[in-house]
Amino acid sequence: MDVSRRIFAVGTATIPFVGMSRRSAWAQSTAQDAPIISNKVPADPLELATDAYIYGYPLVTMEMTRRVLTNVAAAEGKNAPMGQFANLREYPDAKFRAVTAPNADTLYSSAFIDVGTEPHILSLPEEDGRYYLMPMLSAWTNVFAVPGKRTTGTGPQTYFIAGPGWSGSVPSGAKLIQAPTNLIWILGRTYCTGTPEDYRAVHALQDQYRLVPASAAGKPYTPPPGRIDPSIDTKTAVREQVNRMDATTYFNLLATLMKDNPPALADGVPVAKMASLGVVPGHSFNPASQSPAIREAIDRAPREAITRIMGHLKTAGANVNGWTFTTNGGDYGKDYLQRALVTAVGLGCNLPQDAVYPLTTVDAAGRRLSGASKYVMRFPAGELPPVDGFWSLTMYDADYFFVENPLNRYTVSPRDDLKANPDGSIDLLIQHESPGAERESNWLPAPAGAFILMLRTYWPQDALLSGSWAPPPVNRSSSATL
Image 1 (cartoon, rainbow, N blue to C red):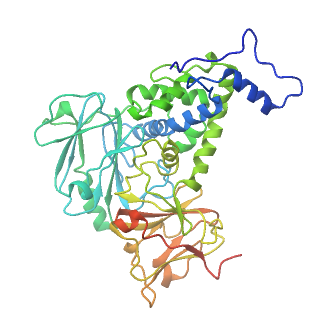
Image 2: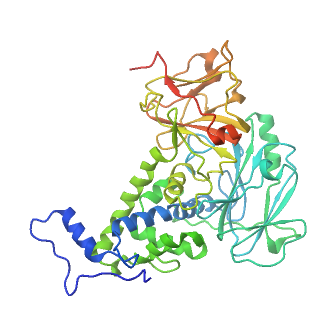
Image 3: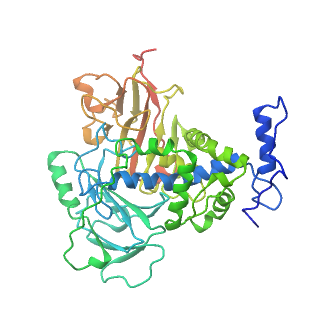
């Protein structure tokens, strides 16, 4: 099969008849200039270009995230140079824009590593039973390893992380983890109650999370300072930077990144489709060399693809009591649209065995959630989320970022000393204004406008993974503003 073969109009450009509609002109151009993906049927260039954009969205987003988070000389806050941990010392606040749908239940320990240059050694300390996990994500956002309490326990551990092309011997006492791409992201999470005492305890653990290049094993090692690139935009949210890229910039970056971060072997079909558009790993992308129909399709692809990605939220999982509920996260197989959506709204998503994140934008009656109304989420007695780790209800604005509020509270959970009703049930109060001091322990502050709720469940039990337990609906209270 020749995926680069094209059908062209012979000897002349495609000229629409006078009075022909734009839709008809597009259809005629498509029929003449479409790439051949099989031996029988020409493919629709717009569909191909849109699918290619969706397929590459995680890889491009990961790279842009890496650029923003590593563009510093030394580790500070959420940022650190390549190969070094950035340890967040307190929960993110409403000003945090580096990652969509951030977490305010654990302290992040984040590190981007190029294991194509050489392997790296990760050392983890004794955690003394504390819940933590160190998921490792490929450049395509798939989780390929998860050291942590659930999988490897909380004792001291050492890992030798190598790239896809590496071969050699592993140091004594270390376990080999072979990454599928050269760029990887370790997005560690360590549970913390948020009290000053527990902050100090977790900080002591973070200080012992250590990464060193394999060549420095067993030697004193001081990481080199990072190089700052002043052309990198560290202010604008990564998702916005990606979404506003023109198609040529986007596909050129995608082609460059695929050279060192190869697609999975199972992804032969989308890779062939991209090649038919001129998007080839390691090769410069030049749409000027393509037919008019393909050039127009490529130009339209970002808008079409972003609409499809965000529109997928409504069908990304089962609808249970108004919640979008899915266990398809962390490792997506060939579900490229799901992978792109999770990248857009929850980059760094865990495997379902580690965390499931029911999400809702509507109340029990299907009305858009808004701070103009008041809501109650009631857990019957004995029916709090079934987890072996922990759970929380997190508030986001319409763009999946935290919401400014007088308590600086972005989640509500058992660590807020929730008050039960006389029958043992627990009400979570979701509204813009305080319900009163005596009820604030159960209050999740909302913005004045539209908002999104995410129920974070870490180390979910079988009842949650199987769907036999479901989140209760979010009911608008009788005192709501109509």
